[in-house]
Amino acid sequence: MPDTPVTPALPLDRPALQSAALRALELARSRGASDAEAESSASVGQSVTVRLGEVETVEYNRDKALAVTVYFGKRRGNASTSDLSAESIARTVDAACAIARHTAPDEAAGLPDAARLFRGEAPGLDLFHPWSLPVEDAIVLARETEDAARAVDARITNSEGATVSSWDADFVFANSLGFVGGFPSSRASIGCGVLASDGEAMQRDYWYSSERDPARLEGAAAVGRRAGERAVRRLGARRVATADVPVLFEANIAGSLIGHLVNAASGSSLYRRSSFLIDAAGTPVLSPIVNLDEAPHVPGGMASCWFDGEGVATRARRVVDAGILTGYFLSTYSARKLGLETTGNAGGSHNLILAPGQDDLEGLVRAMGRGLLVTELMGQGVNPVTGDYSRGAVGFWVEGGAIQYPVEEVTIAGSLPQMYRGIVAIGRDVLVRGSRSTGSILVERMTVAGH
Image (tube, rainbow, N blue to C red; front, side, top):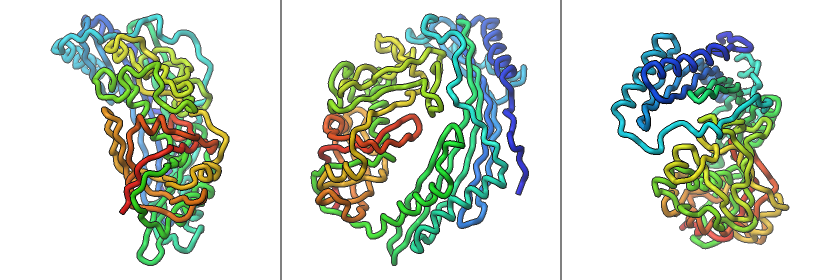
């Protein structure tokens, strides 16, 4: 196996990143730009996949980049490069300027208001934990993960592999209003997918754990066991008759419902009139039991930051209060297009936390009585304009408040506005998946289309 440094250094250190960004701004001003912004970044990563006990892939990445945006009044141009030499920075700025000079003016274009930029020194958010993991040790962990999955049951006959990965990065963002900021961050993950067979029937499932700090990851054996148990429990799956019944979204996938809400409430969807939440701020959009917070300053959070992609200070807020949508997710540009103010969401949302209820998953199954517990979704059948929802699903049929048998080859359908208002319970079985933290979500009624 090839050797790799225990702690691989980033391609550029913080002073070099800052120098590149500030040099780009200086060159933009010398070319006549009225304003400019630049972001320089560097990252390193390692990913190891083992399948059926053998090393399948060992991947490394070592990247650097510079992105420059210039403004000539209300004309905007941007360009990027992966070469941060002085000559390349100059060429990139020239390219952005050339684009801006040939672009139509846009009244919403421009830097944020200076008063909204983050200022001062920020305390750390516990985001940077480089994983000092030689590739040989990563292979051992991946094998341990897969071995634990395959040991769950003799019916686990194949594997999609187990992957152990790490990623470290740093960046500096600067603009001509005097803002300069950046911070390092890390991600680590362990995941595994396996296949179980019983006669001609075959099922697959997976599990993974992802954290900023590798010390907080689920153990390799625990991840593998979860993947194996989830695959085996799906054996014997059958279709069900078409019916209108309650649907319970397992915590592992419930965050997708929050994701559709964020997409519909994002500024780009709203000003393009491609959202079912147009003019919905201040109105009841979800069930009154739903409270959703955006918490950008959570230590160790996967979407934590003191400022957004434009340097605008982030703030904690309640996005949904007792079912009422209190605001949108806006960048400076989208806010201006809508005649509103930025919410500090250039680049996306920050650590969305759905307030949990009282019941665990077993309690929600009992409360549902009869219906479908969904554990995996397939397809992209969501219309962002109307909110129409139709996706393939697998899971378990519930009767008498207890799981009866696994289900496959069904479609669940409804409309997101009705689904959101029809949320009758949220579990305390909270999982964090990316930027979303949620328990299982029980929806009062959807159409389950089977045979």
